[in-house]
Image (cartoon, rainbow, N blue to C red; front, side):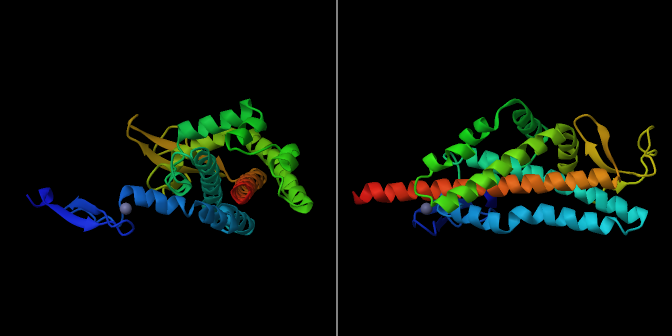
Length: 282
Ligand SMILES: [Zn+2]
């Protein structure tokens, strides 16, 4: 049996022998070196993500919203559904980032973040946490101080830098509140839709052929298969400019939260690097 044949390769980083089976992909490194490779780049990864990637959902959603105003009804439906998808993606980015930052002592940030998938359970848990716990708990779970404690926690920051960070974090607390107020309903419904394979393309302007309810003229829905319940899920939304504007603004809020959490985390990292250097040199 060719698949039973064991082959040998060596780890690119430590040179240890690695065995794999014929027909399998040859690994580049051993598991430990791969973790180390990612960990060594976690700070760079966060910096790079904060510079560009974090804004991508907001940029796409804002562009869709601008285009929606002038488009014909069928195109407006496609754009509206895309805005909702950006909302789910932005929520997934934020929930995944919080989780990755919390778990960073157990696994590389890059792996936890890039591997994260928003589902009903994680969306529900996150929005319930926002609604039921004070923001200081969320920050503490990430090893971050409240805005008023920045001076004491990050002693090596200049007055100006401390002021900038404090301002960003105060704004972030407002954004967290707004995101929580948006509620779990939308996130839940769309977390469901986002896990469905053809989400984005599987949309319809009329669902009467699938259910008895049907859609109103200004509605659009995504279609997904629920194999467990053996049913078809129809997630409908209304193409209502005011509501979509509100959603785009919450996408902006989530983007700001992610950006500020990274900013604060990088600051905390620099602070601990500095104090380690000082301890070493004394
Ligand atoms: Zn290795």
